[in-house]
Structures are given as structure tokens and as C-alpha cells.
Image (tube, rainbow, N blue to C red; front, side):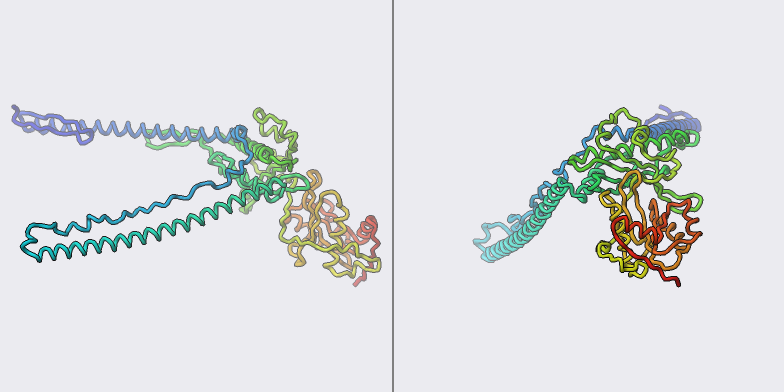
Length: 517
């Protein structure tokens, strides 16, 4: 047996080694060397494990990126295997209310007698022991009965609360299901709000890749059998660009490899195009009632103008699709971008530049300024001088005139609030996909020449309203500066003489006699 001997344990792996020597110095050296050997081995193992973890993490991130890019390139294909028609029963609630479960256990009678002594022989000799035992038994019985009574009362209260909650639950459930049935009946009867609500539900179920979040503004125009969609498309900055992750062992870090600029441009183009075609497909497939002939898709992107730092909202794609033609397309084989061109869509040359285009059809039928007005035109009399008419009545009269002009064409002409805010007296909504859009009208009951400042104000209003044209109507005339100003702008000036001609064309004899100041 050696003079010095010891079993030592590897603190990293638990391995045991026997160190022995007849010489103390040699023994200590061997022992230290063994520990150092174990330390170096542990360090190598740790580095290897770190590298393996880094490589594994990089591989996992790369796979996640590949999966996301695959999903982004298959936005359209992913919806073609899904029936977008809505099952109304899926909106209903048929879940049963939870059963009553009182989790508190009732009192156990035997536990109350644990401290009560049992009847014994000694009670024959000592009556006091009998009295004591009987007293303890009575107290135990009383305590048990009191606690049992309290338990029953608490359980009863809990059951009553449960039954009340259950009753309210089924009342709410019945109301919810009744509302769904009413919504379905309204949808089947072509109610616009029901159709819009239905489509909102359809889009809420439409699953997109994680990096995408879409918002929809839906409007159904019954007389045109048209659904108009304003869709918030993703900003390019929100899409993923990293295509590969690599682990660098020397720095113990994971690096990223981003997509080439041109490849990302192609990806963004594909994403926008596929969202557009997919959304139109989902509308036509889901609306099973005979209430729809056209879908207008306007795709918007919110961004920041780097020149001004201001928020910008740009329409980068606008398309009108006709149902019969669209349903004849084989969407499994189309190029989404080519499909948009085939449908005569209006698009920016490159989506990634966010260059704005004019929406084919963009109607805001919820303009807060719009009011219903009584007809004035049929009560007009040649003896009435339009130049001296009440200004509010004159605005309604102009509205009536334009309504007559567009009669039978599905065009709405609305008078705005009398506060005259935003410089708009009437609004024309024309749903025609070629010449349609929003027109703003200002009516100036003037006696003197209309100055160029009024025309400039109208132009500013057209820009603020996003209208396609502004129309200024007056009982007077326009100066040279005004006529020159509108030459290259979407403005029309109607003078008093032209206004009389418009009335005459519709069979109304009117008078305008201005009084120069």
C-alpha cells in the first residue's frame, strides 16, 4: 500500500480517480494534474456544447425564417383550399354552463368525538367520570350539528349563486344566438350593414403569416351590387428581411444574413399582389347570396415622408373585379401581379416605392357633414331672384339642380351642414368606375365678380377632401385671374349665365339679377 492515497471526484462529470504515491510531493502533483486535466476536459466540453447550442439555435432561426418566407410567398395559395363561406352556427354559442361543484367537504362527525373518552369500567365506581364523558359527548354532538347546519347553509347559498349565474348565462347565450339568427336573416335579405358585418367576420378568420396584420374598411353599395374595400397593407419595413442565421464560434454570437435589395422588392411586390387577389377571392367565395357583382379593392400603406417627417397614407393598388370573370380564373396557376394587370388594376410601377395611385372608387357615405334636405327646385318661381335668395336655400337649390342632372345614374348628391365648415356646401358621390368618385360643390350667391381667392380656397378643399373635382357655382361671374387659375386643375367654374342655362335645360325658368356694389 502506498504511503499517500486518495480517491478524488471530477466536479464536472462525477468521475472518480484513485491518486496514490509513496512521495508526498509526487502525490500532490498527480492530484493537481488530474484536477487540471478534468478542468480542461470540462472546458472543451462546454465550448463544444456552446457551439452545438449556437449552431442549433442558428439553424432553428433559419428554419423559422424560411417557413415565414414560404408563407409570404403562398398567401394566395393557402386560401384556395379553404371554403370562405361562413357557417352561421359557428358564430353561435352552444357551450354548456359549468356544473355545480362545491369543493368544501362536509364536517365529519367522528372527528368531533376524538377528545371524548370511551365508556369504561371506572364509571361504575366514579359517577363523575360518567358525567364528564356525557358532557363532552353532548358538546361534540352540538358542535357537529352546528357546523353541519352552517355547511348546509353555505352550500345552499353557493348553489343559489350558481343557479343565478347559470340562468344569466343561458339568457345571454340565447340573446347572442338570436342576434346571430337576425343577422343571418338580414344578410340573406341583402341588408348592407349585415353584409358588411358578415365580411368583417370572414376577414377576421382569414389567417395570414405572423409578420402580417391587415385592417379592413368595408362598404357595400346595394344599388351598384358592389363591395368597396379599403385595406391597410403592410409597410415594407414591417416585413422580415433576414434569410439566414449563422453561428460564429470565435465570437460566440449569431449573425444575420439579410435578403438582397432586389429580392426583397420582388417579395414585397408578391405579398401586396397576393393579398389583393386573395381578398377579392374571399369576398366572392364567401358572399353566397345573389347580392354582389363587383368588388373594388383599394390597398393603402401608412408611412412617413422622409422629406417632411409627416405621416403619409398612400393608395398603391386599386382594382375593380367583376364576379363572373373573376370566378372564371384559375387562381392556382396565376401570377398575382399579372392577374391584377389582367383585371385592369391601377398600380404603382413598383409597390415598394409606395407611389400613390388614384383609387378607382372611393366613397365615404358616412361624411359627418351630410344632412338630408328638402327639395327647393320644384317651388322655384321666375319672380325669385337667385342673387337675392337666402344663402342656405340657394345651396339646397344648387344641390337639387345637380341631383336632377344625375337622375337615374346611381349618383348621390348631398347637402352638408349649414356651419359651412371645410368649405363644402354639397357633395356628389358617383360610383361609376371610370368617371366616378367624390366631387365637392361650393355655391356662392354673389352679386360681384368672384375673386381668385375663392377659387384657390376651393382647390385647397378638393385636396383636403381627396375629391376628384371641385365645382364652384355662383350667381355672378369670374375674373380673369380665376379663369387662369383653373386651367390645369380639377376645377369647374359655373357662372350665373351658365347656371340659368342649366336650369332651363331641366325645364325651370329662373332669374338672376345681380346688384353691383
